[in-house]
Image 1 (spheres, one colour):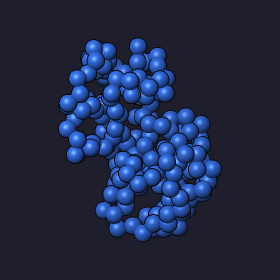
Image 2: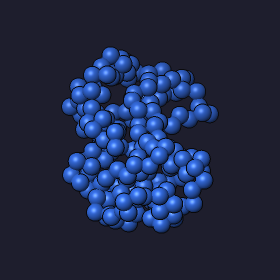
Image 3: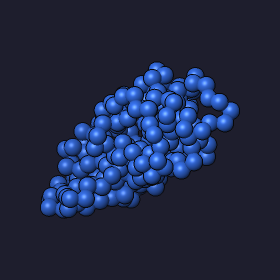
Image 4: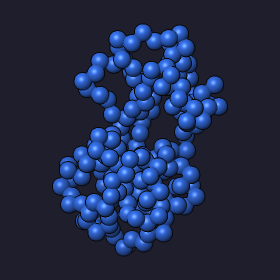
Amino acid sequence: MIELLGFSLICILLFYLCLLLLSEMLEKLKVDTVELMPNKLFYVSNYERKFPKTVSKKYLFEKIPLIYREPGSATRNAMEGFIEKNNYSVNKKMELTSNEAVKQAVISGLGCSIMPLIGNKNALKNNELKIIPVRGLPITTTWNLIWLKSKNLSPVAVAFLNYLKDRKENIIQKKFSWIEDFTNV
């Protein structure tokens, strides 16, 4: 069932079922959750960008424009945490409101970014993006399906959650095993 649905259809289904897909938990809300899968974030560049043979972190973060997600985004929070932890100065070029917009900006050569692998399969396989190895990356968060504890879920939502719980590992293996091709850069 879920394997046949497109991503947009899944989002509509989740909205209808009062479920959210997040990679960063909301601490102030009382929620129930189903942990789905790891979300790995890598430093990515467009495929055509040339790098020196030895790439310093100073070069990657200060010389190359860095493209950010909007404030509040889990991707941005993870990226900023990594930058702060490592005391990098950053050449921040722009801020965009979706991973797709960031991906297109990186592909276009406007800069580099730290991005989740999950939305970049085709761009990586088609040599539009490349992963640049950086010590301390990937950042790993977890995709979670959440809902308010106070919400009485419909029978359809309960059936959907049971389906995911029962088949999660099979779905991950069938649809997301390609991630392993890129995690050992």
